[in-house]
Structure formats: C-alpha cells, structure tokens
Image 1 (cartoon, rainbow, N blue to C red):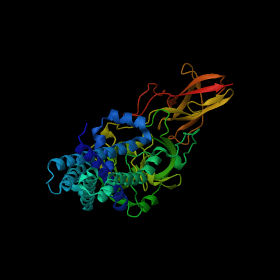
Image 2: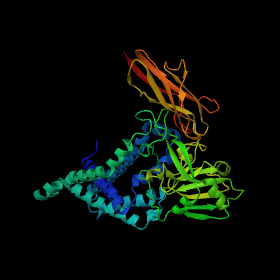
Image 3: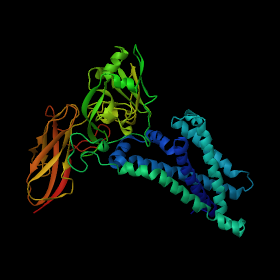
Image 4: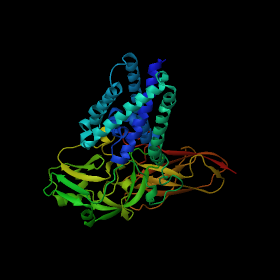
Length: 497
C-alpha cells in the first residue's frame, strides 16, 4: 500500500495531469497544437506486431481509434500522476529544495519535447510544427506545476489556517471535475460519431447499387483528418519525369475526366462486414497525367503522398496498363467530401481501399520500390480484393414468419467479376444458386437474391461466391491481417409458424 505522501502525490499529480490534458485539447482548438495522444499513434503502431494490430482492428473496427486515444490519455495522466508522487516524496524528504514542482515539471517538458515529439516526426522540441510548440508545452507544464503545488497543499492542510484550509481542500476535486468536463465536451462528440456513425450500406437491409454518400464507409489512420482548402492546393507530379508539374484543383478538373462506378472495400473488413460501398467517381486517369509529365521508361514505381503523411505506391507498369486508375476529384456528381479525400484522392479499382490515398498532394515517379504506410505495418503490398459475399437480409438472429422469404445481399471480387452466388440454408451441406443482377461496371459489387420458403424451425444460412472465372471464394475463416478476411458469411435465423 502506498504511504501517505505517495498517495497524496498520486492524487495531486493525477488531478493536475487531467488539467494538463484538458488544456492541451483546448489549445488544439485555439492554436492548432497537436495532442500528444494523437501524435503517438504512429510510434505505437510501430511497436505493435501486425498480427496484434490486425486482431484489434477485426475486433474493434470503428471503435479502435477511440480505444487507442482513450488509452493514451489514460497513460499520459498516469505518468503525470507518477510524477506527482515523486514530487510528494521529494517534498516530504527534502522540503528545502526551491521550486521543486517547477523543476519536476521542467523534466516532464523535456521528456515530451526532447524524446516523444521527435519520435512522432515533429522534430526536436516539436520545432517542425513551429516555435510555438515548445512554448505551449512549457505553458502546459507550468500549469501542471502550479496545480500540483496547490493540490498538495489541499491534501496536507495541517499547515494552513482554517479559512484557507476550507478552500484548498476543494482544489483537487475542482481541478479534476473541470478537466473531465472539458475533455468530455472536447472528445465525446467525436468519439460518439466514430463509433455510432451512420450505418454503412447493407447495415440495415439490402444494399442499394449506389451507396448514399452519407452511408459510404469511412476509414483513415487519423484521429483528426486534415482539412484541405481548395485555394492553395496543388498536386505535385515529379521525380523521374521530363516535365514536372503542379496542378491546381481547377487545372485538374479542366483535364479530360472519366467517370467510373467502383466498389471500395477496406482491407480490415470482416467477413460479412459493412466496410464496403459503391459510388460513381470522376477523375483523370493517372496514366494520362504521367504521360503528360513524361515518365521515364526506366522508372518502375509511382509513389503517392497525402496531406496527412499517408504514403502508398504502385508499379508503373500496372498504372500505364490500367486506365481505370484515377486521380478522383468527384463522388456521385459532387466534389469529394472532406472525409473522402477532398480535393483529390487515388482510386484504384480491384484493390483494397488502403492502396488509394485520400487528400492526395504528391505523385513521384521513381526507380526504387517503396512500401506504403500500412505495408510498413505488415499488411499485403498488393492488397488485391478477395472474393466475398454477404447476406444483408435477413439479419443474424431475426425471427421470420414461415412462407416465402427473399434472402438478399451483395458479392464482390474486385475487378474479377462475379459469375455465381450460392446459398445454403442448412449450414453448408447443400447449396442453391442465387439470382444475380448485372453489375454497374467491371469494378462493382453484384446484388443477388434467393427465394426461400422455410418451415418452422432454426436455420443456419451461409453464402459464398465465385469470381468471373468460376473460382470459389476461400472457405477457411481467417482475420483481415495481412491480406483481407476470408470465410463464408453465416447467419442464424428462427422461423415461426
């Protein structure tokens, strides 16, 4: 059990730590200071094995980033509580050390600015983000020092007169309560929308051919996605090219464009999952941009960089043979929404969404291969979409009435097409063919239906698909890491008379 000074220090440091974290998020709103828990996302991913990260993604889905940020906030407050315990210990044993709270706060400032910020890519003292960064962190730790001192006085009130004692006893409670209120106002709306976002296509019934933009799945690596203004944005095309260029958004839109219906799927989509949507994208074929730029015939790779630091690459030969690969600027007849990469994003049909960076800013032609952001975490470099099928209606656990029932869903195989969908109503012992609706393009999902007349009882329904050449999808159940989930989507329903 902790001794009394240690307990007092933990309480004081924790209360002051909550205040520091709350003030940090307030500065995010006021000055643009990037919160440390969000900055540490990259280093945390680097420390995590691909299998563990894949398991967490499969398990948590949209809640993953919320859990990660909340965990890092807790870790930060715990570290500051430990610093408060050290302060209490030293204050009890060596009470004559002047400005002890400020000295320990300065040590905390040094750890953040000289160790943690460089690990995140912000440079020593965080100067890559500007001179204001170390100054703001200095202010935050000064606040921490003052509050630790006040809280310790509150928790050791024997030295105080009765009037001041009544005030300072409330300090830890007031500091903690105010800090928690600020954090709740700042973080809970974003966390709520991340977890309880509008349902993706197929989440509440049969998916439409074109997913409404408001229901189009959204996944990114960021806690807070970048906001990019059209004015001042330019797409830089450079590297091993004879005619480097910078295209403004107006110039990009003025080039001949292609409109394509494309289904996008996240590589972390579970079997039967909802991280899959279809839209009509318009943009400029990437190979036309590279031809205009004069890509070197000896180059081998096209690299992409986005505003949020996300990177990806494709073989140049693949790009030059695929007119469907677009620098897209429009979704369903309107400019890309911010969450889908405004002003421009890469659209790479037949590959999982991780291959298509949003908020695109830089295209480089090179002779050296390079891994993208997720490939550095161990995910599949090619990221070719696996054949999959999903039951949208009925839903798992539904109670149905005996009689004619229409089973419906979607099947998708990237750019390989779908030749057949098969449904089993007895757990996989017997299979029947479903009815297919023709796809909108070679790059979209196929809607399927199956007329079923069950009697009373319990049923296990499974679905599987065959790609355009008749190859059956993989039956073996596996998680999404590293190449996408496999297995047959399975639901259980009850039928009453």
